[in-house]
Length: 568
Image (cartoon, rainbow, N blue to C red; front, side):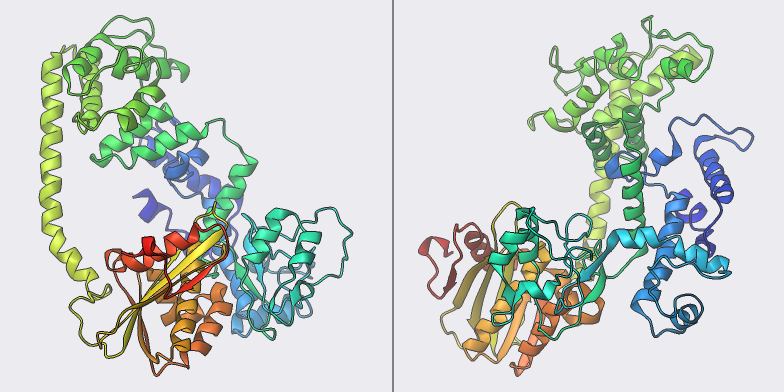
């Protein structure tokens, strides 16, 4: 309700104007009250700061939308349109009024600016955070001032301490004869980290224009989603939390536990300290006895209630989950849940622990509010019965949906074993990329309908920027090999869906424009060209070639002389 309705209501207004802090504060307060309160007459007890709840689930929060950051992301979309679509009426009107002889990103004061323009300008810092200059010819990109290095955040190059020429342009780093980087000059000027990143950049034609792109999407086009995550990342850097990464890892895993959403949320509450045990209530100013109502312990903590209280220990001892003295249950809520998440041997049935935890909590509440003591065997029986019922229902639901899922995916993923429509060659391609390796790997296997022996190739290239870049390079190299072999009727197959989307809609992927221009030029050499998506299981041969060649210590290329141990 909060994510789909409450946070979406002001979207149109926020895409045009910067909401004042007083309004965003009231919106946040209203949503927080709805989340924490059980009725409309009370504001409820706010167990955690709302800004922490707005962190993504992978970072320990609940993924609620921060109004200010979302407002910035929406306004950044408008600013991005001014930059990337200068011929639109929207851009022409604002350019004539506010930046006739400058750039919308330039911090130039305007005479009597409208609130709409001031709102758009407030998103400059966010856009600058993810703006990157894509190298075409490199003639307009300053090496030391413009953000062209694709690091975590785009930035200018960093000097290794040598003398800096402030007027140096990126095209001065390119050898015009080979259209490749001048390695001696790179090693002389830049730190090793930057040399590696620069070498991973694919150079297009020398006449290609330099362009602006968005760093935080694969396609290079700005999206509100990526802008919002960038704004959140910036705020988290400014407000470092005391919660360590290990605890956030535990919180993130709760959403992957195979159980109902209610139980996942309770597991998250335990790790976040949001369970109303008496110790937490006393900290919140509630005057209550902090002792345990079931066993009389001096302090009732979350860990004590679920794991250390005498009735809880009995339940865990009776369950199929083995107890280990000194390890489980222990005095740490984090250690106990870590044990349940990852440390239980596969020979034991450990799938019922979310229900056991939930029914221990329910038994505690029945004792506290109704003075009912439940037998540990009864509590365990209820938990295991409920777990079994839910798991059985999931199996039945999966069986019902399986047919429709297969039906939906079949048109997109080709079953080539049943397809006889190809009259020429079939070329299976794949790329292999690992951040820690020196090279990327590319491989292809080509078969013919005439029954000729298959041909194949494998090559390692300097490591590219991402796995998707490697997939594109694998396709380009395979195309050049097919052209060299005079195979003009070729159907290419890949297990990378993004690559298929890119080739079918090249204008939607400006980050790969240099690759796509080269690909378009090579396509003209084929009488028939197609690229289709297949499953990974249908592409194991090309995958094996790419993986093996990636781990080679030196640059090497194989065409039809593949090492015997790599063959299938």
